Image (tube, rainbow, N blue to C red):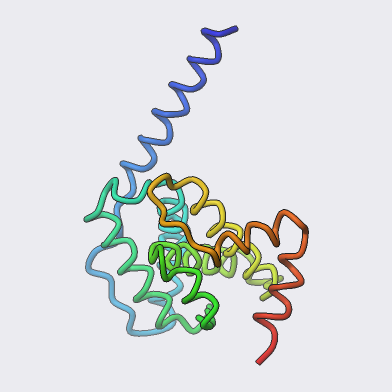
Length: 169
């Protein structure tokens, strides 16, 4: 039983490493019209997944290329509107990488739920991804704002907080 457990762990490690290494951020992309943004939606989903799986500092050049691609796409796409309210800035002030996690996961949700997009659910998915990434990164800087989100989520109050914070103008 112990050997089986070790085999599963080793197999999982190689699978995660192989998928992380196989990711390449798009190069020479151009966004001149709506179709340009649409054709890269699959790459945005891959980028969102890769950013979640890849430890901070593991592949700095690849991470920089991925975040720049995501940022350029997110700033220009007419199909996904990410409201970067002050609260999001506050959630990523100690750990700037979390801002990209939020944008990537919000975008991924929007791409995968075009027919049934729900802004509250998109924010919930993105914020839970931020919490998950914060928790899995041993090098994260302690952040009271994220710790508060973790408590809200544990107490089943995150959705209410999202409604109050993101839905109000």
